[in-house]
Length: 157
Image 1 (tube, rainbow, N blue to C red):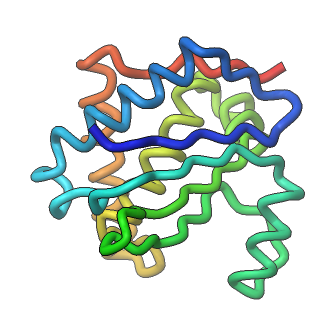
Image 2: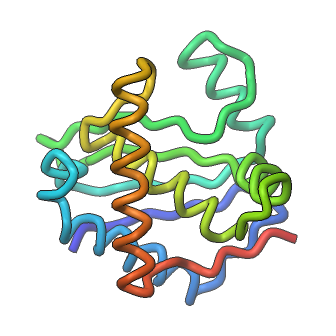
């Protein structure tokens, strides 16, 4: 099982010990099913950071020269040094989208984490055909997590 480092830098997101353990389990389920996802996220330490829209927009500008808000930014790691990468997720975007579309916040936030894991696995979503492939992979990932009862109980207050 890989090491998963979780950092919560969002004041309204509650991540207790049980939720962190569930998140690690969810990553484990994805890793166990890596063959279904282009071989999966590379081996090594995986960092997951939960941020506000403002903080993620700042990273978006700094690293991608785009100051707009986004849901997920993924940074590839150096697997040869034991680092798979980092997934930075906006809890605000997940909360706003879930509220606007009648979805569960916890599931929406986990979808964003899975999306980042899939980027590290080699999926892209910048072109229409690749975006359809990414969406299909997201659906498979979320179905696996639901069946494994591995969705963390994220809380946004």
